[in-house]
Every structure is written in C-alpha cells, then in structure tokens.
Length: 325
Length: 191
Image 1 (cartoon, each protein chain N blue to C red):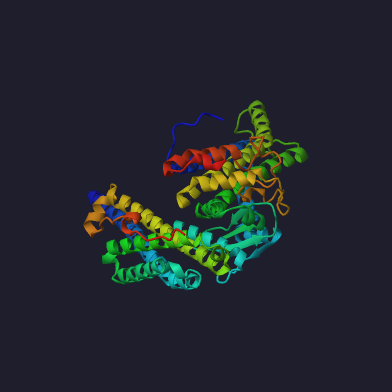
Image 2 (cartoon, each protein chain N blue to C red; image 1 turned 90 degrees about the horizontal axis):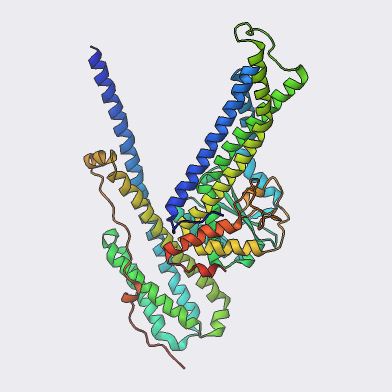
C-alpha cells in the first residue's frame, strides 16, 4: 500500500473517487471505440457493429434497470419492513435509515430484512425515489447504533450517488465490448474472415488489410478482459466513494470503520449471496480471500485500505482512531 | 445585415444563460427553505415525545422531581420559542440546547435506577429520543449543506452577476449556542 499523505478532507476524497471512476469510463469507451474501429476496418461492418452491440447490450440491461431490484431482493429472501409500524426489533433500523435520509435530504427508501446470521447489507434501486436497502438480522445483532448508522450511510450513499445507474452504464459498455468481440470472432471462425468484397480496390494492398485483421482479432480477445478489469476497478472506486460519502452524511468515520472491522472479523458466510449479487453488498460476501488478496478482480477495495481511509479522516472530526480496534 | 444576426444570436444566448442560472438559483434557494422547515418538523417531534418520557419515569423516580420538572419546563419554553417563528431562530436554538442539557441529566439519573434501565417502555422512549436528537442534528447538518451550496452558487462568477440583479441574498448557517453554558446546575442525589 502506498504511503498516505497528511489527513485529507472528505470532500477531496469524494472528488477524487468520482473523477477516477469517470476516467475509467472514458477508458472503456476508448476500448470500445478501438475495437469497433479495428473491426470496422477489417470487415465492412463499419460503425454499424458498435451501434448494434450497444443497442443489444442496452436492451439486455433494461430489464435489470427497471425490475432488477425486485429480483435481487427476492433472491436474497428479503422481507419488507413496515415503515409506519415496524416490529420492535427493526425500530432502531428504521430510525437510523430515517436519520440518514434526513442527513442526505433524500426520500426514505424501502427497508428490508434478511434472515441470516452473517452481517451484511446492500442497497439497490435506479434512483433515490425508487430505492431499497436490505440488512441481515446478523448485522442488526452484531452492531451497535454507531456502526449501524455507518453501514446505512454507506448503503444510502450508493443510492444518492446513483451507483446503480453508473454500474449499469459501465455494464452496457463492457457488455457491448464482449458482444462485439464475440460476434467478430465467430464471424472470423465461420467465414474465414476478411472482407466480403467491394471496396478492396479502393483500399491498399492485402498486407495492410491482413495486419489490421490480426489487430482486430487480438483486440477482440483482449478487449473483453480489459473491459472486465476496468469494470471491477470502477466498482472499487464507487465503493470507496460510498465509504467517504457515508462520512459526509454521518460526520463519523470511526463508526463505519468499526462496522467494517466487525464484518471483516466475522467468520460467517452469507448464504443467500452469490456471484451475481456479490458486488451489491457492503463487504463482498464471497470473501474467502478478502483479507489477504488485493486483486484486480475484486469488486471491493481491500478492507484494510477502506479502514485506513476512514482512520485518516477521523482526525478531521476530533475522533479517536484507536476506537476502531 | 449580418451584424444584426450576430448580435441577435448573442442576445439569445445571453437570455438562455440568464434563464438557466436564475432557475438554478431558485432551486437552490428552495432547497434551503425546505431544509429549514424540516428542522421545525423534527423539533416538534421532540417536544411531543417528552411528556411521554416524563410520565414513564415519574413513578420510579419519586425523588428526582426537580430534574423532571426542569425537563418539562425546558420543553415548554422550547415550544413557545419555536412557535414564535423563524425570526426567533436564535432564541429557539437556545431553548433547544437548554432542553438537550436537561434531557442529558435525566438520562444520567436513569442510570441509577436498575429497574428503570431495564424497563422496556423506558428503553423504547430512550431510543425514540436518541433518534429524535439525531434527526434534529442531521436536519440542521443538511440545512447547512444546502446553505453552503446556495451561497457558493451566488458568490461564484458568473452567477454572482445574476444573483445581484434578482435579489438572491446569502443565507445564514445554523449555529448552535454552547449547550452546556445554558444549563443550570441541578442538585443530584448522591445516596
């Protein structure tokens, strides 16, 4: 881990994370453009290929944009909590979510509880008006008010930062890359590649075309991997952003840091989570490597790094970082 | 003739720009007003909860009449101050910190009564009051955030020109008087 400079303000951290996540989007767009361009030259599909890929990827994502949250909630066995008259054991949860929605000036999300002893939480929903947060009973049991507040602030920051939308945007772009690469490779495989005719006479000799073709093939193989790696980098940036945005809401970095420490130290496995939903949770529930690895293929930054960022902010609020333990 | 079109074009762009900036200032100012109202809502909640709390503990805390009375009086004063309206914000803020101090003392006393500490009613009320205090705090925090955005918007160039033209003025941040200074000493039982 690189050495951290002197304590920074959380506003700066927020800006940094936002900026980096958008830079990553630019990279994905460039990769898509490069791939599309190479394929366009190597075949005679031109830009049409990129457009078709984008449209298909968008259509595939539309369902998840509008109905995705219901599906995720259903698949995790989440039960909705009545906000008007919550059962006693969820009263504090509803109170904490209310506090965070006031702090952020956002509408109250729907609140769900998942019956599982592993502590975790997630948020879903395309914008603050159509949002839900879900928390495991394990988390409610194992955390005190300050930690719970930190976790809910993190989740609601995801909603406030429109992270579901952002993730979808990146998903569509990366999906388009994958589709385009897939079609091109299949086309090459089945039809032996090369342009189908018309136009060769205008463009140079066979040599240049052949090189372009090889470039296109290489890109088609590598681009989806780059896309996926960048997608995961984006996920990590948005997770960091949610951590620091949570501090903006609570002004209590130690609370969230303590919560992360508790989740990290808990050995239990969240049974309802799987690879499709892992990126939504506050800490990756498939976390067998969580503590050791800091890999390019992680959806979340390493817990140690997340806690270090929060520890760094503690001084700004007159908090004692030793409380994090 | 061409000059005329260019000038008209520039004027059109300026008008659009004016409209866009004006609208954004209106939006930001309204956010400030709404945030202010939110605070009043939270304060009212707190005022309504306190009689319930006092009733719940009264039976157990016969010897703490002074503190209980103090809480009720502080609460009544806060209600009056708040009803006087936003012009009275300073006095209202002071009454509220007074009340916060009184409540803090009450809860400190509750610690001495194990029966009371375990009482479900009291625990629930304690949570209610904790969340109410927090909600008041966060409403104020959010209000300050909206004030910051609004003030920044009317202070920066080029909005500053338009703000002046249409009378958008800076709003004040919400500031809390020192709570401890406002609370009088209470005679705590030591036996």
